Structures are given as structure tokens and as C-alpha cells.
Length: 183
Image (cartoon, rainbow, N blue to C red; front, side, top):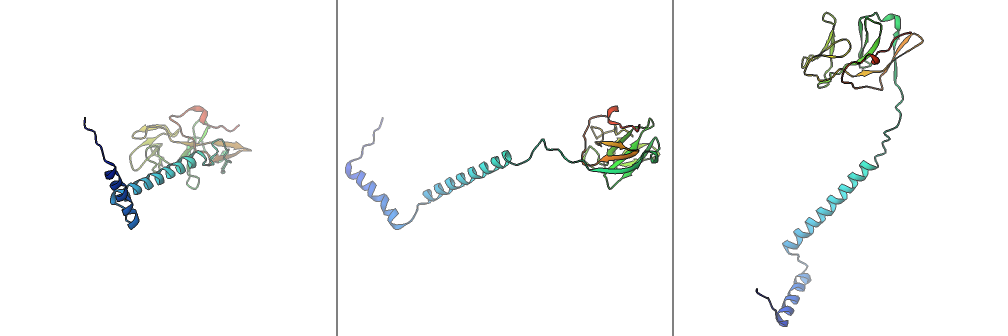
């Protein structure tokens, strides 16, 4: 093993050579880049802390209730069994099935969000962009859509059909419980 030994004079020369650069006010390139990297590291750390604290303290209350946005669709009697009515302002189709049940289906295809249209002659919804097809319940008849059309809750009060357009519910398939019947 080699041992480096310096004499006292060599140590003094080394110590006295450093303050000379400090006296002139010049910083070596190595020191400049070292300080730049440390500054960037500190800045990145502060930004990361800011992002984490913004996520944790975002102020979103996940349990907050969203007020219902009810849209009057019309009286129950104005919708014949087996009919589909478009409500473009409300972003849904109101379907009354043959058994009298109501369901409000979203206009958006579950594949890529294109607007579906109702084909009365074939009794199905069709996505003109990607050829997905859905039946009157919103069930997938033809892929690429992998799940049924989303729906809005329907309420029937005093013989009037109302749709809550503030609550869009996603689903994988049609379930009979999603229908609402007039009493």
C-alpha cells in the first residue's frame, strides 16, 4: 500500500492556494456546476413537496353529496311502450320498454365517447364512428364497445318523468333493477 505523506510546507502551500481563488472572486467551473446541480435538486424537492401536499390537501370531499339536476321529460302517457325519445339538451335518450319500464341512456358510446344515434328501423343504437351497436336496454350488440351504455337515474313523480342529469351511472350490463315503472 502506498501512503501519501505531505510535509508541513506542502500542506501550507495547498491551504494558501485555495484562498487566492476566493480573493479574486472567480469560481471554478467544477464548483459552479456543483452548486447548480444542488440548487436544481433543492428546487425539484420543493416542487415534489408542493405536488404531494396539493394532492393530500386538495380540498375535495369524496363524500359530498351532489345536488340532483332533474330535467322534466314529460308526462308518462306521452311515451308509448317500445319508444325512444332523444333529449340532446340533456345528453340522453329516454327509452320506454315494451313492459312499460323507463331508462335514460347516455348519448356517449362506451368505446371512445362518440355520440350514438337511434336507428328506428333496426331498433338499435349505433356508433357511426366505430360501428358499436346497442339494443334498447343499452346492452352491447356489436363490439368494439366492451360494456353497456351508461345511464341516468329516472324518477316518476305525480305522473311526470324526470331524469337526474347530474348523476351518470356506468354499468357493465343491463339489470332489470335499472328500470323505473309508473305506478
